[in-house]
Amino acid sequence: MSGRADRWTEWARRAGQDDTTGRALAAGLLMAGWVALLWVLEAVDVLTHGSLDSLGIVPREPGQLLDVVPAAFVHFGFAHLAANTLPLLVLGFFAALAGVVRFLGVALLIIVVSGLGVWCIAPAHTNTAGASGLIFGLFSYLLVRGFVDRRPLDIGLGVLVAVIYGSILWGVVPGTEGISWQGHLFGLAGGVLAAFVMRRRTGDGVDERTA
Image (cartoon, rainbow, N blue to C red):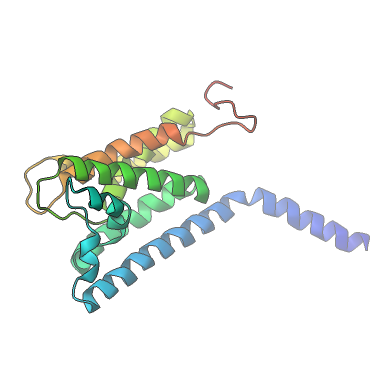
């Protein structure tokens, strides 16, 4: 019996040391499922002749506030979705490495801030949908998170993200037809806000930056 107990103890010890692998697996599965859902929804939208497009955000109509979150899961065609798929997978994976629950809180905050920004200042009679606001928010979140949490590894990751995806910042420049710079801009703001709201804390509730 002692031999079996020793094997279980060794397995538990290794599992604890392999926490990084577990987080990476969870992050990968989460983002694969997230993106798969977007593709399923777009297939449904196409098969029903655009029935889900009504979930986009039409500015300054009170009833459209209910679509602030659903709009982030709807796209206007497969080309629109394809353009968002890879950056969402990559940035989402990096962000979710810190924990699935934390990531879901970050994503929800970014989606709400981006959607409300569109609702407030986008041109009248437009319809805005897609995951790009979330993508811009995850970008800024990853850039800022390491400095907020004072974690050198996350700062390095933010630098890597800036090198790979820094060119997306052109998406906040007004003037490109068919591009919601409002959603992009407020997505960036939502990501910075999320870095502060969802910053790491110690187990006793004290901000890790001052512990």
